[in-house]
Length: 158
Length: 309
Image (cartoon, rainbow over all chains, first blue to last red; front, side, top):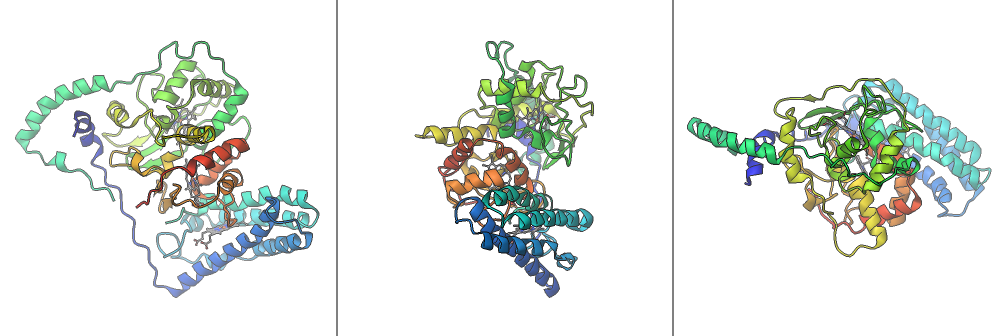
């Protein structure tokens, strides 16, 4: 050890980072709820991908296809999610969950964020069939609405 | 998991006394070697700041992500009253007020004082600042960029909200002990070296200096310093469970275009969106030029692949 390390080691080395608690769940209802909300999120991402592919000029603009994807997104956004967030299914408690405990303590705000997405998805549904410029303009707010919820309520991957 | 170093605690009583005598001398010498060294008064002479260019430096450096009020989203001409909290193994840091208020903020600081804080981690009173403020990254910033940044900060509103104290236990609340830490970990050389194209060099500057991406994406050693051998290879999430992802060339398989898109819109190639603290980072990188986002992507593609853990 160098003199400097000796100087500061006693000051800083006494820290032991807490280890992660092994996450596991035995409750089938918890596992089913996690599976269901992942499936729901994946459907959102899938339909958003169709619109995003057009917005990023990766696939050609097609008004019919765009309208269908946007209508799906709007429908998915308005669905009642309440039963997905069962007690004991938060990240750290259940395998595969990235849902932060803050959802359970802030259910009202969580719901408001879902409704903000629904509003952005409705705007996309109105715009997607019009033309590519309208679709592109609706893309930012919609992606922003997904991100606003993921920022506060989803933990990074394990 | 890091094992705490208990070797230093296992000394006998007699050992403690002699260690104490030697220690006192070493500490006195150490405190001199490790005293805060602000920039010389004439460092910025001859440089003129451009506030418009400074707004981009401000975005690239993510100052707002820490110094905005809690829960407030960034907008034009943000107030920077501080108050956001950052948990760490050493305690909780609270970002201070860096608005132009002359009492509560840094309105009364000279340009050299602000530059000393950003580049050297030295406060206006000549004290060491905690590296929760990522000056170890900013220390590599160009002086002209810093002068532009300061010109921009001067255009922002004053906010009278007083700064709150950090919540740190002894010994972490002793600022003098930071000098040794700085000597060990405050390094001015680049991590990724070799023959870099102009674009890769620009990307390196944006990632290693201004963007301080490593502060989240690189694991730390037992003393809280960044582990440069495992650069950008992912780390535990400081604000809760989960991990900050590995973004070395081995793990991040997205194309350069896809990385640039993520830094612009937050969309992954699968149309998931950036979450957690990265959502805030994307709000900043979205304000950069396409060329700068492409440069960051080009740099990430040459970061040596490291598997971690």
